[in-house]
Image (tube, rainbow, N blue to C red; front, top):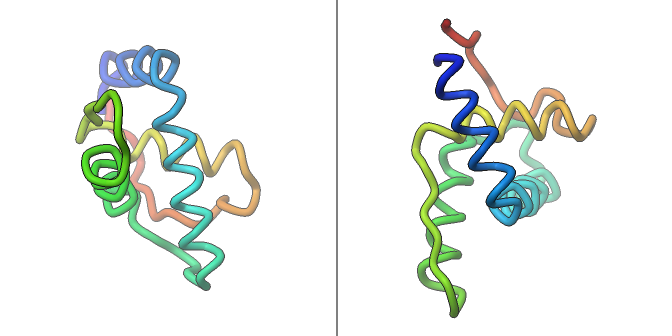
Amino acid sequence: MTKALEDKFQTYDEINPHVYQLFHRFAKEALDRGYNTYSAKAIFERIRWYADIETDGDRFKVNNNYPAYYARKLMKDCKEFSSFFRVRELQE
């Protein structure tokens, strides 16, 4: 992952705080169901389903390049998720 991609993520995240809110919500649901680890990609697909099927109003797109960044952000922001996602070292 490159610095440019990280910068794009930061911009996307600032413009779309609802995506992070949903990511946190769905990760919390998995944690509450007893999962010690879970897939950030699976949570992203759940966000897609939620946005496309379960809600009315404006649809939004989520970028396939960002699940790893959301996982790292949540692990940093919330101690209960500190080891919830298995992440690889970022490549420059």
